[in-house]
Length: 71
Image (cartoon, rainbow, N blue to C red; front, side):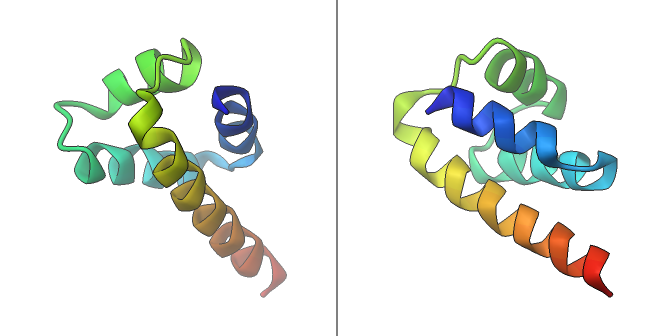
């Protein structure tokens, strides 16, 4: 599932990526968005318990990005 999460993250534009990192930081009460990006996204060290929720959040952000593109 981490490959799927990484793939979705790579489909995001810069603004959506930043929104995703901030969202994950808040959702999981983490110290920094840099930690999320480096350890979770780049290294693929996402806790199994969080992966389903992250997929859901990323799908919503990608839908939002697509809707913004369409207007």
